[in-house]
Image 1 (tube, rainbow, N blue to C red):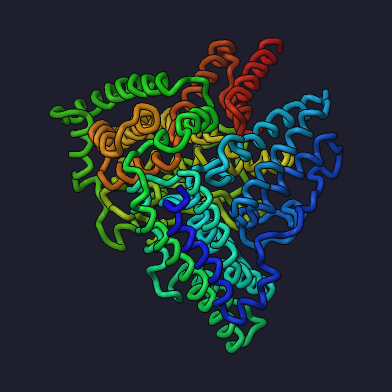
Image 2: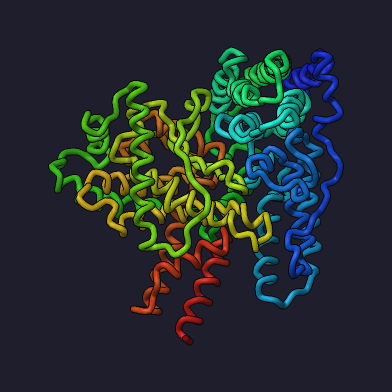
Length: 632
């Protein structure tokens, strides 16, 4: 059996040897950038009234951020909260480090479970924090994959859409800001540390392959293409270099010779460490192609059915079975399609299926931007306009406004091929970095004008940015709760926000954008069908693509990227519709119970200001709120 995996083991050995070939300058930093650092220092998060749980909550934060220093940089948290300095370190994804992280989180939970508390705030924090620790620790039966601070256990440590090889360098280039020589040196230490970082990832990949966990063949092909795109630019044109050089140029304390020296070091580290390491990953994946399955679902992996059941429970946050979710999706597809048909007919589109008519509209020049630099700039301008427009109306439905700003950016070219149509990333704690609403401009037909209002309400306000920025600002919550990534809550809120925008009148006199809203909701209903289709009913990739394309009328480039995303993120696509349905159920229940005393602003504050929580906890909160309102 082990002979089957000999080639990737040899590549792993080659990568281990890379460090010996590094320049003398890199060796100077070896001690500073090792991914195995001291145990995290625990600092209490609440300096006033200290909860009996505070030390455990702080330990959760320091454990996570010590293991994921790149994400500490994204948030810009205090070093004491991250177990020490982090801007000069990279993550360790080796099998030993991953096992240690998961064991630590489970140990914290054992201690938390044995602490008796009576205060209602402590009880709430205890319940949610234990659930979060479990979310991040992953299933005990699966040592494969890696812990993602957004999705919990992610099954493939290297893939085409996320993972250390994508997220870590992207977050460094986007978020690692500095304004002095020490900051520049920290950045260089991270670049020099890529050898050790890549060794850890390769070791994890090798360990997972030994267990028979190998991504589907088509995913490996797309992964290779993504890795090749990552190192396609000249070193001095790479985002990791340009982000560094632009900041170095602003350091008034340095003369030009010093700046040139720093830039040359960065270029050397990229060429000899980063680029060389990624070439080895490309070679490793080329060798894995012959061993990879042609099946598309997670069921084809060892014990994959159990893995999917866990993913449905954690990421879908539901007790429904995959079969029940599949039928719910089919029912929602029928309902939404009927609403779309009514708008289509009213606007003269009467022939063909809903999907066929949507594809025809998508080709209509009046809804397309120019396929040029100017056309893509016009997309960004319109997105900013939609944000400004709804910001002026938010007080109608929301009492509390986040303190953080949001900025629209296009995905860099190196990410376009595999990135989703839109995506949101969090601001830093101190607000020095805004929330970012990313838009994919790879295919101008993939961003028709009638889709963009809805995408903006989902990714920015009142969707992801509004919710995540409010969550991040709740400094009375334990730090891990301030970044809680509960999939059904977060994605359910963002989809619910699209409906809220409709209720606010943002689609009035704009039937095509309202059609875009319904198309987006249909897209999420289809996800219930195709995710369970792939991973439970054993659909092929091609069957899933055909169903989504024909049902939604979405352009091929988007459909293919979506289906391949579901293949490596089992269960994640379920959270959108399941979460939205639950939030709507709770709102309807509260409205019916309170009648004219129902306050939509108070309801939205209730849902948002307690931070992201499991849906069962949210239901308890809403029920308690309704009961209290009825007494008053």
